[in-house]
Length: 185
Image 1 (cartoon, one colour):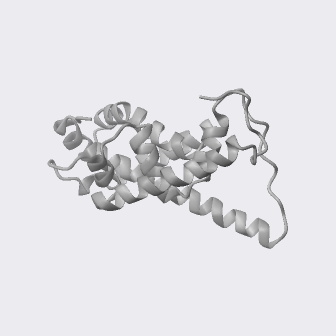
Image 2 (image 1 turned 60 degrees about the vertical axis):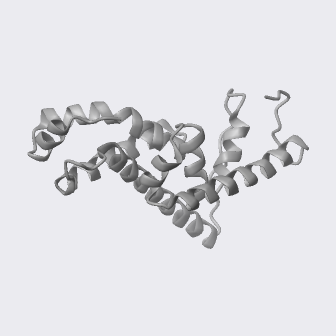
């Protein structure tokens, strides 16, 4: 995604029109990335807003030769990681005090809900590169730039994610998971 450098320079100067244009250009990508972590529209909107707040707080650190879209992607992923860590701490607090969170709602009408459930069981360090590669259709090099990892590290994470997902889906097909749908791919 190419971002007009003049737009970034104007946004650095605090021009609200330039900032609005940047948000308009980058919002679909930010929203898509955040929705890979969280299913609730409200959560995705909150995370997207937080990502833009962090981006504009640190926009003066940007150099004209930097990849702005990659930088915003990294900020968005970091915001999502922060939220996941917060949720993990809350879950641990609930468990420590023996308070159980309310059970998740009934599965939606989406035929592939079980597949997303399986993907969401993966650890974030495996799930994110998998989603960036398979859903966002980014190259391994782009994933390296976004996540700040080496090419070999991204390849290893993709391999491990696919292998774990195959095991999870294998359990599902064999009927070991409770909500197996009647349909197949």
